[in-house]
Image (cartoon, rainbow, N blue to C red):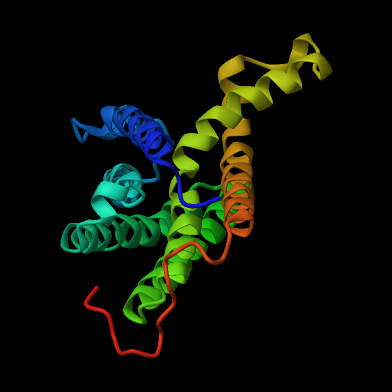
Length: 224
């Protein structure tokens, strides 16, 4: 199995645009009182806003990199790839770390800091593979990287599913639904990137290795 087919890439893009609108909408007024998360101060809020807006850039630009029409235009592919990494992944991952650490939730702190670190590492490895003209390696690392980016979507699917799965095992004294949702969000976030990476890895390993994108690490440096 190769990278997402055109139809799958378009579905990813549509989902990315929808979730990006949902993500940034509460922060368009730049009012700390509108934050969906508890804030410890203005710096915390500023980093959160920076994280969310740059994450939206990565979420939306990522699916474009899997479209054959974009990949066929090398200059366009490189430009979008650079914007994805430098204006999306890099600032969003860097700001995610203090935002997670200030959350006061141990699951969020551990889960999102690990996810942010992996986001940076896979992005760096994807860039290095492209520079080495290892196009198969570049594609594989970009799939892993976007799997981490897509956490924003997956976590919003898993959290209500976790709430539903929890319902038969709790009594009437479980507390308001809003409180239970807030408690499950960190779990959904952590499970989200793990599930995404497992799916991405299974797709990568199922793909035939003679898939037409050659590895040519020894012929100099690519202009990526």
